[in-house]
Every structure is written in structure tokens, then in C-alpha cells.
Length: 255
Image (cartoon, rainbow, N blue to C red; front, top):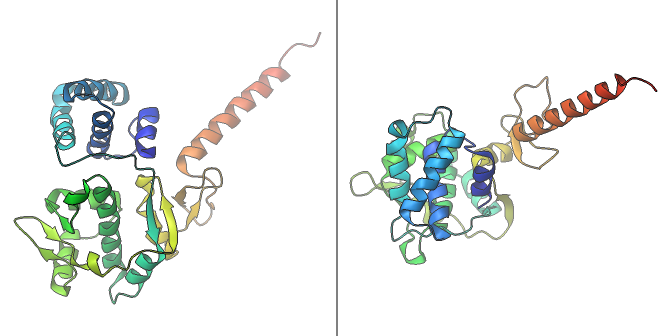
């Protein structure tokens, strides 16, 4: 829900417009809007937040977001956060795998947590249905710049996952992950989810923003990170406004 509120306030947050359109449609559906009403709201949203928006260009994405959202088995709940437990990270740490495989397994764990929250209890499973599309989403969401198809084939050979019907994948390893007891992270900004395993392993100069507490990756060792991109922009704007006020006061004529 935090992510949806940010979308409604700021517009599109990431480059993954299709995923964010779907989140908005699910939200509108669950607060009582019909599919046609959600379509009108989504078109208005896109008109406001996409430069030179044309329905003829985006109608496929809009239709997909609506069709994916208005299906019977899904019910979006208020997702304020997902919890990551020490036992889950320890499980990954103890695997005799290279880091890119562990990061993909971590992505699968987090993706299934989000997916299972949005699915009725009786529909939960360890399958990744229609994995071709979902693995593309996972690759983007988690910043996986590897050959994800090769990693999946290797994990199939190693017995962590198996092939299902057509493009479905069964995440066999999910059943081996211990039940979480020791809470390690509460993730409420899902666009930052890919940073958490790197943060745990101290990879890539990731720190908490000093203003809001979100994780962010530093761009240079010569410029230590203090703020996430959103807070840095907000703080810079405030400083600019204050500087202009001071300059204006200095230039006022003395009586």
C-alpha cells in the first residue's frame, strides 16, 4: 500500500510502468471501482504523468494492467511491507553457490512473498506460473544483470527448481527455506528490494538514507552517500528556496 500511495502522490516511480499500472488497478479494484472506472482513472493518471501521452501508444499496457487485476483469484490486500528473516538469509549464505545464484533465489523468495499476499489462501503455491513474463519482471525488479535464463537452467540441473507445464517453474527450494523467527528487515519500498541482499553482504556501498532511512547505493567512493535520490532532491530544493529567501532579504532597501 505504501508503494501505491507513493504512485498516486508522485506518479510513476520506476521505469517499470506496466507493473505500476497493475498495482494501481488492483488498488482501485479493491476499494470498489469497476473495471471501466479503473480504466478511466488509469488513463487520467497516465495523461498526467507521461509526457505527450497517447492512448493509442499505451492501450496494450493499459488493457493488460486491467485484465491482470480484474480476475477472480486475486485480491489485493494492503501491503505495507514484507518481512525478511535471518533464517532465510542464512539458508542462502550456506548454499554452495556463486553469489548471482543466491541473488536469484532471494529474488524468487521475495517475489513469491508479494505474490502470495495478493492471492487467496487456497491459491498459494510454490509455482511460478507463466515464468517467461515473471522472470523478466524479476530481472528488472532485482537488478539482475546476468543471463537469467542460464542461471535458471543451472538451478534446474542442481535441483533447486524444476520445470512445470509449458513455461511454469516449480520453486522446489522454497520448501527447504526455514520458517522465519528472527526478523532481519522490513521492506516497505519494493523498488528498493534488490538492495537488501547486497546490503547484507556489504556489496556496492549501500547505506541507509540519513533522512528517511531507505536503502540507497552510493555512486562513488569519493562522495559518501548521505541521502537517497528522493530526499537529496527534496533537500536540495529546500536549500535553494532558503537561499533565494536570504538573497531577497539582503536586497531589500533599508528604511
